[in-house]
Length: 329
Image: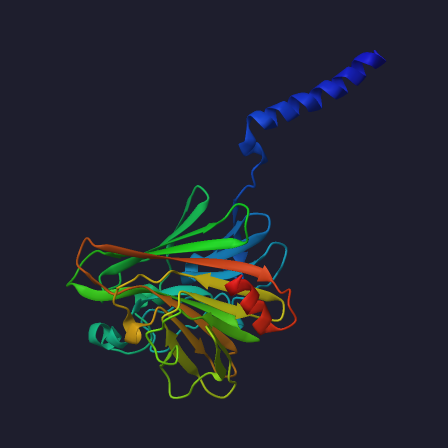
C-alpha cells in the first residue's frame, strides 16, 4: 500500500504537467474584470492582468485610474471634491472629475456647434455611458451628442503580460449635418516632476512647439530632440507639438502615452498631434493630450484613434535621465 501511494504521488503531477504542455494557454496570464464601487461610484469596473489594473467609471464616462496591482492609488489625477457626484450636461460650469476622457477637436469649433465655448459638448464629457464587457475588453458607449450628432465608443484593454493599456477611441457620426472633427483624448495626471516630449527630427514648428496660451510652461527647454517642462503653480499654460509620444514622470511612477502621427494629414491647433496643458493651483494636475487628424464626417462615417499607455516604476534619480532612457533606448 505504501508503494502504491508513492506511485500515485509521482504519476499525478506528471499527468498534470503533460496536460499543461499540451495546452499552453493554461499557463498564460489571465485578464480579470470585476465590478466594484469606486470612490462612491457604483457599477465601476476594474480590469487587471495581475501586474497592473485599470479603473473604469461608466457613471462619469471616464477611465479614472491606471495603477499597479495592489496599490490604492496611481498617477492619474482624480478630483476628490467630486467623488460620487453625477455629471450635469446642462451645467454652465465644468465637472472636472479627472481621469482620461475624449473631446472633439478642434476646441475652437465648439461655439459654432454648441453655442458655447465651455464646458465641452455634453455627450463627450458630462453624461453617463453604457459599459459592456466583451471578453477581455471593456467597451464604453456614449449617448449621441445633440450638437455633433456623434457618439463615442471607447475600447479599453490590457496586455496580458506587459504593463500596457490601450484605449481605442471611435467616433461614429449617427445624424445631423457633416462636421469636420478629429479624435482628441485628454489624460489628467498628478503634479509631475517633469513632462517630456520626444520631438521628430524635423518638426513643423521652428522651436519644436506652438504656443497655445498667454504664458509658456515653467522650465520649458529643448535639449536636442527632447522638450521638457514642469507645472507652474500660478498660471495655466498650454503648448502643442507634432510629436507622437508624451511622457509624465512623478516621484515613483512614469506614464508614457503613444499615438503615432499620420503622415500628410491635417491636424487641429496649427498642426498639433500632441499637447500638454498645465493647471495652476489649487488643482495640481497636468493634461497629456493626443490628437488625431481632422476628418469631414457625414452620417454613417466612423473614425478612430488608439492610444497606448505604459506604466513604469522610477529607476533613475534624475527625471530627464529617466525620460531619455525610456524614450530613446
